[in-house]
Structures are given as C-alpha cells and as structure tokens.
Image 1 (cartoon, rainbow over the protein chains, first blue to last red):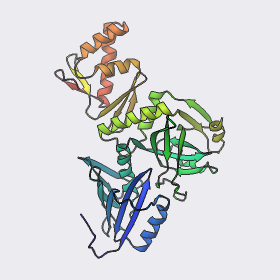
Image 2 (cartoon, rainbow over the protein chains, first blue to last red):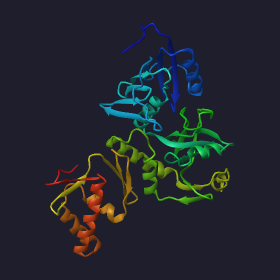
Image 3 (spheres, chains in turn red, brown):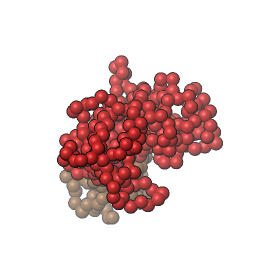
Image 4 (cartoon, rainbow over the protein chains, first blue to last red):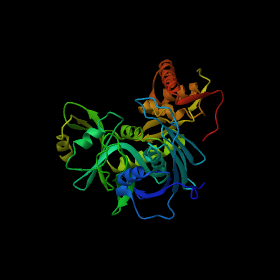
Length: 281
Length: 97
C-alpha cells in the first residue's frame, strides 16, 4: 500500500526508541499536527534508518473509529499471523511484525501515540525487552522504576522527583544486557506520557538499580518482595501483549530473568519527596 | 467435576515456576495468581495426564495427609482454578506437551 501519489501533504518522522527505529510517513497532516508531533517526538528523532519498519499514516476527517465512552479511553488490539490490529477512538491501524510495515488511519484530532504504544509493546517483546506500565527516572546516573496499575502513584512519584530526569510517568522499556560481563537491566525512556504531558520527553537510559511496586501509605518504607510475587506483579503491568498465551509465557520468562538481575521491593509512600530518603539508604 | 476427570491447563494460561512456586497468568483476562507449594504441586500434576483421583493419591503419598481430607482439599482447589478458567477438564488423558 502506498500513498506516494496522493495529492496531500507528506510529513515524515523517523524515530528511534530504545534502539528500535521506526519511520512514520504521514499524508494529510496539517502544519499544526506536524508541528505538534515534531515537538512531541523531537528527542527521539534520529537520522533516517532506510531499513527501519515503515508505517504509512493517513489523516482524514470522519466519524470516530470507536464510539467514545467516557471516562474510559479504549485501545483494542487483536493479532493474527504476526499482524497486530489496533483500534481506538481516533486511530485505526495495523502493524506486521514479520514484514516490518504498518498502516495507520487517524482522525484530524488523533495522535500516533496510542498506535506506537501497542507497536512498541510487541516489538520490544520480539527483541526480548519489555514495555512496562511504570514511571521511571534517572537519579545520580541510576535508573529507578516505579510500577503499578492506574492510580497506584506512578505519576505522583515522578512529580515528586524534581532532582531526577523523568523518563516517563506511564511507560518505560526494560532490556536485559551484560555490562562488563555482569548481567544487568537497562531502563529506557519513551516518548509516551500519562498524566504528565508537560514533562520533557527524555531520550535517555541508565542501568536499573531497583524496581519498586507502589503502595500508598502514611509513611515511607521499603519491603522485601519474594521473587515469585515480583514476577507476577511485574507481568501484570505489561500492557497490550498478554492476551496471547505464547506472549504471556515469554513475558513471564523475561520477568523471571529481570527479577534475577534486579531486586524488586514494595515501596510504601506518602505524597512527599522524602520517599527518596528510604531509597538512598 | 468428578474423580475420573483429567484437569489440564486452559489454552489461554501461561505459567512460570519461580523458586518453587507457580505464577499463572490468564491471558484472556490478565488475571494472575501465585500458588503456594501445595497448590504448585497440584498444578504440576494437572497436566492432562493425571485424573483427579490420581492427583489425590499423589498428594496423599507426598504430603502424608488423610485421603478423605485430601479429596476435599484437592477438589476445592481444582474448583477454584476451574472458576478462574486456569484449568479445563477432559474425559480422557491428554497427550504430553
């Protein structure tokens, strides 16, 4: 499929997120959209990767692809033979993991972010990495990841970390690596945001020093977590890919490996930055 | 469920044994459970090749429990896993793998 000959504006974004490149070519995006998306993804733009997976995106007016049902924002995914289909209110598309190509239709007030979230969840898993529902920061050169379901306090902890570089308040990528022959995990920032859209979208990564499952409380305290519980809790925070049993099996294997390399603890916290004092101990 | 049924993992279930305990994920719903040591042993035996009564007898032998109590406990636990859609029941033994 190609829109090269269509009489509409053409705008290209070439991104690299956690060393995974992707090219997006938009047709029909007006100057405002181009400016907004360029700014949003600026830190993740990288020189053209000619062989990067290519997504052609068409912006055209019309009814929502999926009716709005506030307050829920729905993203539906389905898969067949290596192709992921993605349906949301203002975006509808697919990505073929084997062919490395995709298509996205957007309504004029849509945004490629939901599509990219799903595509990167699948691409990460294919590369033995995990897109995790978590907030992540880098402080003194070390990565900290705070994970939990919606409402657990991920954004709150990012807000309370004013002296740290925020990687994201909603999603981070974890990848196992061997640094100096030592098995470690690296945390990568992503250009996706939750409730902190104003936070800079930092394209940075760091060795992970701890994974923290969030518990709202009236005091700050760290609690040891058994590894089997940690694997279960981590896997429950992996979005978009778990509906396929073979993926769920791979996620469990990766969570098992990650928890062998990096300690997982429960972080009880209240709404003030003093939680860092228990992490710094 | 009766003693002649063969419990087996639901096709939508993924499992990992981490430090001797089973972590099971129901892919359909995203629900997740961590089983204790006895639950993990029952889960491992629920591989489609053992009927409920064989599972009970194995638990009796390995944990030195009363057979009547084991029938009650194993039955209740399997019912829980069936309710979670973590297991399905077969009328005949299933091939391994």
